[in-house]
Image: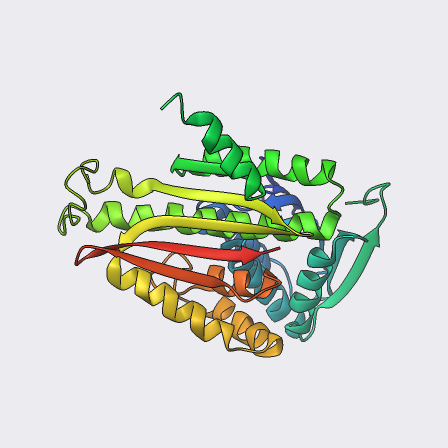
Length: 134
Length: 196
C-alpha cells in the first residue's frame, strides 16, 4: 500500500495515512464538494482494511478544528468503516484532538464517539501550546 | 450612486453590520470572507466557541447559496426563470443564480448571520417549511434527527432540507427565521436568519 498524503488547504484537511496503520488528519474541512475530497481518503481506508488482517491495529489521530455538514457525512462514513473493523476484532483507536476552549469540536467528537460500538475513542483536549503528536 | 454610498455605509453601521457581501457567491469568496470574519471575531475577543459558531453558520448559509446555484445551472435551461420586474436585470439561468447576499452583524452581545438569494418558488417554500419543522424540535430531537440524516445514503448536495439546515438549527442560539418573498409565479427570494 502506498502512503496517502494530501496537502492542507484553507478548506480541506491535511491527510497522512501510513500503511503501518496510523491515519492522521488535521485542519478544517468545508470544501464545496466534500464527497469529492473524501473519496480517495475513504477508498484508501477501504483498501487498507481489505488488505489488513483482522487483528491489525489501527490508530486514527485527528485534530479537526471545524467541519461543515457535508464533511460530517463523509467523516461518519470514515468512522463507520473503522467501527466495522473494530467489531471484526481489529484493535482500533481514534484520538480526537481539540482545543480545550473549542466546545463545538469537543461536542462533535463526542457525537461521533456515541455512534461507535467497538472503536476505542479517546478525547484529547489541548491548550494554547497545540496538539502534541497530532 | 456615489452620493448614496455614505448613507449606505451609515445604514449598515446602524444595523450593526460587521460584514456584507452581495454578488456571485463562490467557494473562493466564502473562504476569503470567512477568514476575514474569523480574524474580526478574534479581534473582538468573541471567544473560540462563539467564533466557530458564527463561522459555521456563515459557511452553511453561503454553501446553501452556492449549492442552489449549481442545481439551477443544471436545470436552468429547461425551465427559464420568471423574468422578474421589467426594469430589473435580465435573468439568465445558470448565471445570476449564483448571486446572493450575506450579512454578518452584531445585535447586543450576539452575532447574527443573514443570507438571501433568488431560487425556484417551490424550493424556497420547502426551505421555509423545513425551518418551521426544525424550529418545533427540542435540542435532543434535533440531535437525533441530525445523526439520522448524517447516515442517510443520499447526497448531502441533493434537493430538500438537508444536513446543512439541521446543523444551522442546532448551532443557532435562537430559532432560525425564514422569509420567502415571491417574485412572480415561479421564483422567490428566500431569506434565512441565524444567531451565533
